[in-house]
Amino acid sequence: MTGGLGAVGLLVLFGTVAFGSILPVLPTGAAVSAAAVLAQTERPWEMLFVLLFGAAGAYLGDLVSYAVLRAAGPPLAERVGWLRADDPDGALARIRTGIEAHELRTLLLSRLVPGGRIPVLLAASLGGYPWIRFASADIAASLLWSTAYAVIGIIGNSLLPNTTIALIVVVAAAMLLTVVMQLVQRHRRADDTQSAEQHAS
Image 1 (tube, one colour):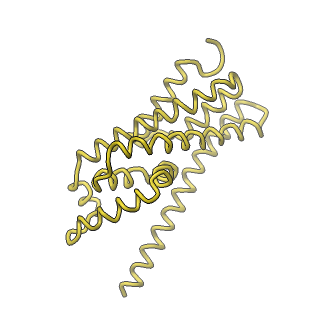
Image 2 (cartoon, helix red, strand yellow):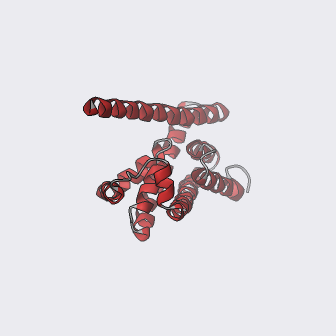
């Protein structure tokens, strides 16, 4: 195969996203966006494979993370302050109810918001959220996540005529989006903490 991503490129995409989903040290969203740029420029029909391989990597990463967190059990949740000593069952019940009420939205947002996946997966695993139901709902969430970052790549490549420049800009934009969302999340947490302290006083 000449040009485009090819089988090797798609496998690298899959591996990057899967590994980055298990150990968040790689920019998984930027990887999907970059792959989308390369596919659109060289072989547009490969875009479907970019979506599928990106989603498959995200899905595998979520399943592995869910299994590991489930095995870690309540001690991990207690260590990070998730469970109140005076009401552990009630806390888990509330978390599970929240996930079940908006499972697709919750799973999708947990991927889009930096640092959001682990808390949601931990809550689901400890709250007794059914494995089959999680595995089913996460298929759609992974596909939507992969599509969102692929669209970022496509838009960036359409606006910039030079593929190399488009690739650089798209990767930078995807990483910038991650940073901005992380800052927004921190700001909200600070507001929540401040509100809680005001109510307590």
